[in-house]
Figure 1 (cartoon, rainbow, N blue to C red):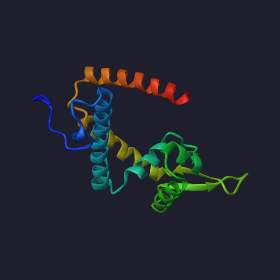
Figure 2 (tube, rainbow, N blue to C red):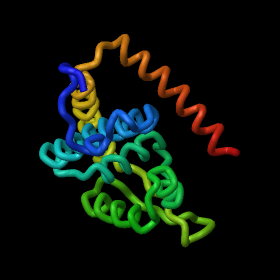
Figure 3 (tube, helix red, strand yellow):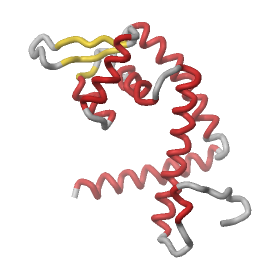
Figure 4 (cartoon, helix red, strand yellow):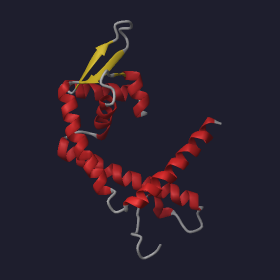
Length: 164
């Protein structure tokens, strides 16, 4: 570890110089992601009394004003249908979303933001974006562009590998 690198006590703490560079990089990315997520979760809870999964569900719905089916929300959020149902129940009780039965299949429900939900999400999203900018402010813009390009190539490679 060089003098500029802070000591990290997390997923990376068990690594040695003998570990493969790819493993060290993966754990570094995972550590950074987890640190950012932990901070965002804490701030959402403190400032808006909302959980990250509830914020995420609202973010999905904000992109689709006509709403999304419960199953589609589950797929997009990569959580079980039961989790989506629980989150939707909470948001519906607060008047932030509405759940409507499909007129062709009463077993299928579409969820969409209410006007109150949309306004609430926009307030939170603006603050959320400022937090992310703050948390990433230690990296110069040019390096962020480089990281974005590198991660785009990695994501493309991973998509190709997972199709095989």
